[in-house]
Every structure is written in structure tokens, then in C-alpha cells.
Image (cartoon, rainbow, N blue to C red; front, side, top):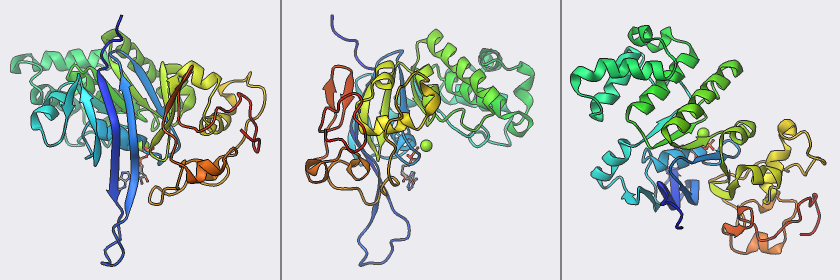
Length: 335
Ligand SMILES: Nc1ncnc2c1ncn2[C@@H]1O[C@H](COP(=O)(O)OP(=O)(O)O)[C@@H](O)[C@H]1O
Ligand SMILES: [Mg+2]
């Protein structure tokens, strides 16, 4: 049997921003290399977590997939159709089937518009309900995300953060999406509210067979929610695979360090694995060779001067490392 066609297919995506404050004519244009050649596929109904330190390009990747920022190279296919900002029809199709939930529940809503109207607006723009059916559909969406329909008249500042995030989810669901990209969607909320929102999102994801890309710096949450996980470092995916396998036996030294920094992620983990040295390099000035080599406890000559390692398949996911490190390789050991 053939594997089902992915809903989303991203290939070699590159996003650069022009760095600010470089106006001098002799100072050649400088770029922030936010996403440096990312490929990934998401199947219908699949949950993919994206993790990595702040600044590694997670949000930019999510936004580039949804064409909210322009990519300089690579391609995004949705239902096997190429999506491009230069093709308005492709954008309209994408916007009708894929939505983003943002981190800041207040910032993503217009403060002057009652939240019921904010949901109605989505229904109208995407032609998802006949005009006279809009109020009933708004009420239905509010109930779906666990909000009283009486809240429809309120403005965002009259709601709690958790309630606003539910409105954000209702707006995303209003288009009847096949894909949702949730970018740190609970990071701004109280811990007690976080669990409620996550449970709601997962329940809806299962019930509607949504594909979900869940961007988070919280490894525990990703482990709980996502069947697969991609680990990003300096704008690249350095490891991607089934969550349980990546968490139980991480292959890339960066993944190992990341997991080691979360002591309670697995109380049975035997040894404290290596910690990272230094800070991540600036995305304006990418290292030669493997982007992780300046911080890698296992780096060899080829890591500094060879080609950056591409993702290669292993028996438990794909990893971008020149070496097959033994499962418990410690800092300073030769691979
Ligand atoms: N609109 C923008 N203009 C310029 N630089 C940006 C912009 N958005 C993000 N960046 C830069 O791109 C890099 C990746 O950022 P981001 O995608 O937000 O990372 P993450 O979500 O993993 O924290 C960072 O260096 C960030 O400063
Ligand atoms: Mg981000």
C-alpha cells in the first residue's frame, strides 16, 4: 500500500531578512538567515511538533509555510498544489484551509471589535456561511471552544487570556481548516489555563482529523501532544522522527543537549548528558560546515570544514550529523 499523499510538503525552504541598520553603501547588505533549507511533510491528521531554542527560526518557518512571510527559495505544496505569493489563487486556496494560532491572544485580535464579530468576519471573508447563518455559526464555534455565547458581545480586553486564546482557536476553526499551525499558543497563559487550551486543541484535532504543526519551546508539551517532532537549530532541521523515539534515543548532539536541559522530562534517564557550551551563533553569520560544530562536543575536522550534513534517514528518524554517535556518547568522546 502506498503511503497517503502528504497534506503539506515543504522543500528546501529558505527565508532571509535584510538586517537593519546596514545603510552604508560600502557595507554589503547583510542578511539574517532565519530558515536555511527546511524540508518536511505532514500527513492528513498528523501532529508535528517543532522545537528549538528561541531565534532558531520556528516562527519564521510557520509563517513562511502559511505565506505570511516571503521565502527566497524552496517550495510549499498544499494538497500537492504549489503555493506561492505570486499566485493569488494558490494563496486563496491555502487561506481557506490552513490557519495559524498565535502566541499573544490579545495581540492577534482587534481590540475594538467584539469577539463574536471577529469570528463572523472570518466566516464572511472565506464565505463559510450564508449571511443569515453567520450568527448561529458564531454561536456554534464559541460553544465548540468552550465559551459562553454571551461573550460574543465582549471586546478582547473584557476577556481573560485563556478566553481570548479560545477565540483565536474559534477563528482558526471557522474556516474549517485541514491544517493549523499553532505558534507557542499557550506560552503567554497561566500554567493552569495552558492545560485546558492544549486539551481543547488536541480534542478538536482528533475530532476533525486536523493536521497540526505545534511550535513550542516546551519539550514536555510537545512530547505529550505530537506524534512526530522536528528539532531546529539555526534555521535547519537537525533531527526529525517519531516523538517517542527522538525523546528516548536522540541521535543529534543538539537534540541530546536540548533534552538534557529539561531534567524532569524523563525521570528514568540515567546520566546527565552533555551541556552545551556557548551561545548559538548569530543567524547573520552562519558557521562554515555543520552549523552546530562550534558547540558540539563531538566535532571533528569534517564538521568545521566539510559540507553541512544533510538530513539522512536512520532506523528511528532522520538526523543531520556526519556521525552515528553511540547512544550514550559523552562530552569530549571521539565519535
Ligand atoms: N520580521 C523580521 N525581520 C527581521 N528579522 C526577523 C524577523 N522575524 C524574525 N527575525 C529573525 O529571524 C530569526 C528567527 O526568528 P524566529 O523565527 O522568530 O525564531 P523562533 O520562533 O524560533 O524564536 C531571529 O534571528 C529573528 O531575530
Ligand atoms: Mg517564535
